Every structure is written in structure tokens, then in C-alpha cells.
Image 1 (cartoon, helix red, strand yellow):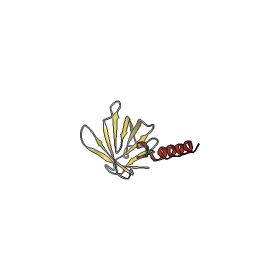
Image 2: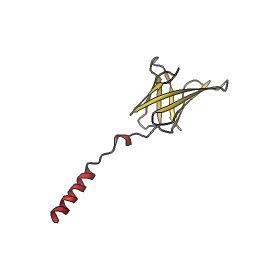
Image 3: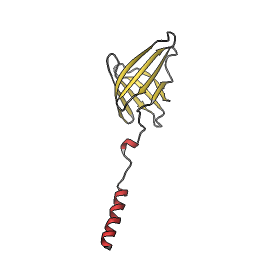
Image 4: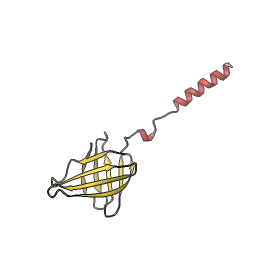
Length: 121
């Protein structure tokens, strides 16, 4: 009986010692988050909304005209990079997350042009 209890105690210790932080816990989820552009043109506002763990939408609003256009994306979050696959007429984008996960720099992949630096709301 003592051997069984000792074996159970050792197995329990090994189980907890073997637990490591899961990679999915290393970075915050983007699902249901909203990111707003803090740089760029004063004539336009950009907002990215991550609707699910693989879908996002970007809304570009003309401040002058008050009109908005929405672009849809599928995305893959491979920490610290977010790859946006544009749907329809949307360009493919790349987002580079800051070390503290508070900002993300988004760039058009085909042109290399930076769209802006976005902050999580």
C-alpha cells in the first residue's frame, strides 16, 4: 500500500511539473477586439474589428464625406504577426504586434506601404 501511495504522489508531482504554459496563453486573443488607427491621414479613420478567431473586418471612413467602406478578411494570428487575407477587393495585409500587445503596425503586403499604427480599444 505504501508503494502505491508513493507511486501516486510521484505521478502527481510529475503531472504538475510537466505542465507548461500553453502557447495559446502566451498572447491575448484578438477575437471580439477592436483596433483603431492612431496615425495616418486626418481625412480618414481606420478601424479593425476581429469578429471571430479567423474573421475580421476593416472599416475605412472618410471624415470629410462621412461615408464608410468595409473590407472583409480572413486572418491567421502567428504571434507576433497577424496575416490578413483580403476577401473581394481587399488587399492582403500584415500586422506586427508590439511587445506589450497594445499596438499593431499594419502594412499592405503587395505595396509595402504602412497603413498605420493601431491601438487596441
